[in-house]
Image (cartoon, rainbow, N blue to C red):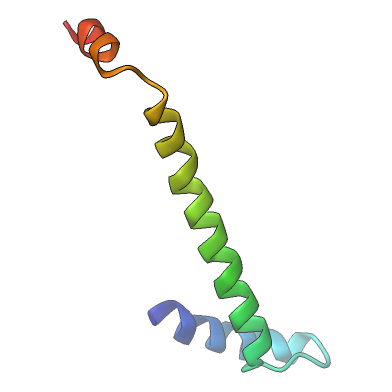
Length: 64
């Protein structure tokens, strides 16, 4: 929520420099939020899938 408030404030600041930018465009905020959601899921899913390929017995033997 804090990020959304900050982004609206920064978008209003940028609107002074860029013509035609709507600082509270819901499509832009929704698209950006969905993009970050996808990035975070991939960032969590890739290491989790790699960890499922490791045999626990082999990993524990290398811990000693």
